Image (cartoon, rainbow, N blue to C red; front, side):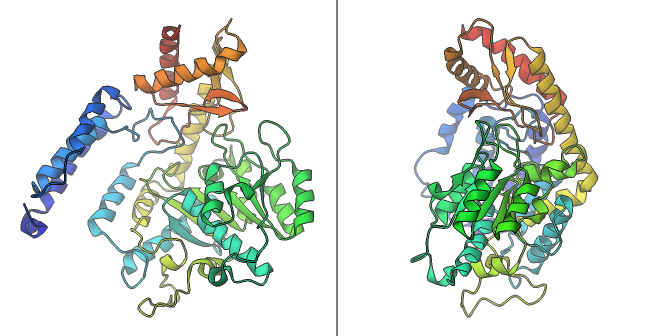
Length: 473
């Protein structure tokens, strides 16, 4: 096979292979190992020299399916608790297949009115879901990191404007360092965004009153009073404990001192869906920019994030006005989303979001979030009831922070013991939940955001840990 034109009449054969493999694969996720290290040898099938003469689409797709279904980490299953990673709802997965099938160039209205209109619709639905005012501007991004880049680019333009500089055209040269303040809950993706924007990863200053990272509001207010226009980063849902900053208080400070409030709601924005956790998100709708992830609690395929900005003009100021004659200007509802965010070439990532929100609606997502809240609370009770486990932080959302602490083991040996247990858990593969560091301790912090997770999977995690721990000696 030397040219894809020869598969013109049989192009669907490779797609049929994937479709036929989908049902058996998805049905196996309830019972198969999340990751089977014994199958890593299969990865050798990916290697070898670039073929001079290809073997054709069906053969190549069949081999990729064979390798992938054996060697992949099965994130879409109900026992992946590592990181903060959702799966893909059935509707979102199908919507993603449609995205690839239609392969729309989603950046410009003229290239795909369908993709542009779908993005406008889902941004409106997401604002409704989270309680964000409809007047906010927005754009879909590949991730929360890119959403941070988007929101903080708008903030950077606003800040430079205070210094009478158009940073989009003139850059940062000659400007002072942009003050960016947060609590100890700030995520590394915020620092990475500042690094990308040329503001410096380590220029962000944190104000925390204790080892948990909780915000020191008086210290923050003093810094705001001394530094002029500044950026405040509020955090909704920290990755080790699910802890959050008091966003209403931060919004009050921002209004009082003329600061820009940026909220990192990567997964925590979904707290707004349940009456049990909505108080944690209170104040987010007063922010100047808000970021969230779709491939976490929304359960759509990678890559998916969203950024919302109170004043939509700052998105076009930060990313538009290219001056290229062949690129049309936006006209009313004909939005060119590549002028509102960092990407020029964009896939139609609105389609899986549209499919899943249309399929399950507000009630379906509220039910899922509350099921995860129940599962996390159940896991916390199991931890507290176990004499060899220690709960390290109150459970606020769907993350449970704890460690293995058997009687008689000295404190100085616990970190190494938990690290070994974490490695054993990942190697075992039945339940995937690695370790992190919290307040200087090596801990487990399973995150329950996959749509398949129930209390039964929380129980299985404890069962497997208690089975593996005695083997460590």
